[in-house]
Image 1 (spheres, rainbow, N blue to C red):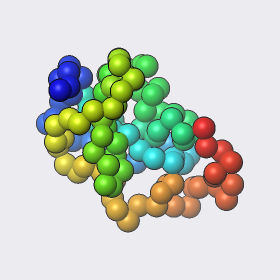
Image 2 (cartoon, helix red, strand yellow):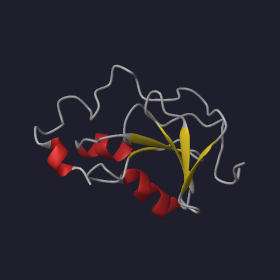
Image 3 (cartoon, rainbow, N blue to C red):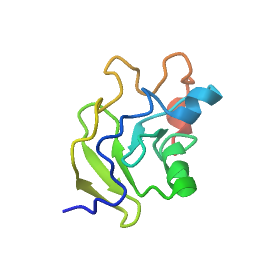
Length: 115
């Protein structure tokens, strides 16, 4: 069972990519969705770690993978994964979107830059 505090299943995602990376002209490895407000941020393996920065800034405690084929949630309070409710669509970034992404911004040595 999961703690519903920090999950608002009716809120749609903020967009197809990391909000901050998109505005900064940066890139990401994988994407995470805030289960409370829908903010899309990049994972902790990405150079900028915007999903964790969002949690630190807002206190929103739960994220969900925003990758196709993944439906796990992460609770920052317990440092654990769990199965949670279905969130408002879409469930993942567009399947045609490059990983890492976005296309055209990923450096050739991207693997050397992962955290």
